[in-house]
Image (cartoon, rainbow, N blue to C red; front, side, top):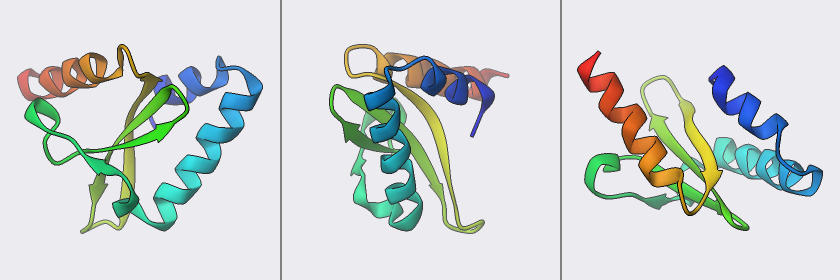
Length: 90
């Protein structure tokens, strides 16, 4: 998990933090339980935890789930899209 994602989790309220961690465990056990995203985030998945979203990418070849971003539903998709755009440019 990228340090910025771990830092974001660290600053959440305790009850949300527990729910997010449980959701990440579920994603690792069954990566396909998330909903597919569209547009710039096509191919990525979202997982809903209360008012928060986990945006992740499944790497089937490596057998890994990469958490790209965690945030409030109001802002998370734009944040995740900006990160994806930044990776394509750089």
